[in-house]
Image (cartoon, rainbow, N blue to C red):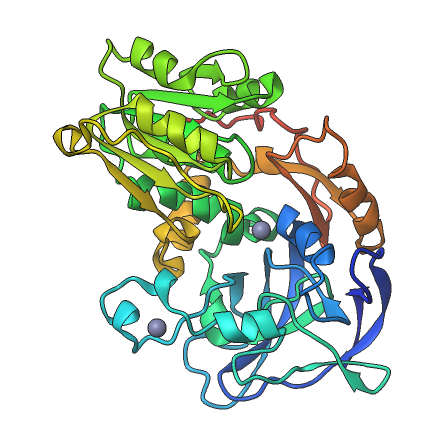
Length: 388
Ligand SMILES: [Zn+2]
Ligand SMILES: [Zn+2]
């Protein structure tokens, strides 16, 4: 079939909106009509990454409707409304059978090669194969994805909000709820208030943390964090975060710290700011040459834990539905994460805005291919909704 898509033709060059061909889904794959897709910094990074194979269709945060299923598809059917998950898994490896689906490595090789799970492409431009991105390629009217990338949504879940769930929302929520396992009545610090960090704040709130302390260098982000449930804020550009966290917790330090910053200094501050037996969860990605330096004295006596978390330890088929239901019950903020709604043709302007220091990187610009329902402005409260 012919469809409109935003095509990455070369590293760092603006995307070109043009007509391309999409082939029918093969075994274990489904054809999705994209209803909404949000634009993530990871797409921007992929555009500027010389290892991204081109020509490609970027986009990895989306929701849509199943229009056709390939052979042997059993988990979804035509007409299902789904959110997309960029980490499909095999179901039979050691990690999968122990329930750690996010650790399955099945998706990585095809993801890096720009193909689907069978190592081939369904995308064609000017008669030649082109590359997928993250097995999803949502910057297009339609896409073919693995059935295991499709999470069925509750009937009332709107597509725009659903399109946000599969990346930063699930990662941040999962980092607090599953990786840190925040308990009611505790204290939790979140370092780095961006698209992931703001959802770690929400996850800590949902998990019942009594103190939620947002740590960032931007006052604007700290103010936004308060709107999403932070009870305290620390400007880490002005204060020593470790000291400030201890001061806010009677000298003990917080029970949990979730580092979404990608900055090793933040990890080191988080380590100093958690109490004995405290847990530091690192979600942000570091450069391969970076080192974390921690004091060795008293290490054994403190009983602290430092752990990494990929994709917030989420299980998409459980957590996407949980987050959707929390949203529908007015307990999880997604409306406020939508900065604005744009056309596919506006995508380069959105990427350009990422260069601006003032860019609010907490929310998302969203492309919708059908409905145009107005939303409140960023940070506002939807009329009639009260969030807990
Ligand atoms: Zn993303
Ligand atoms: Zn597996």
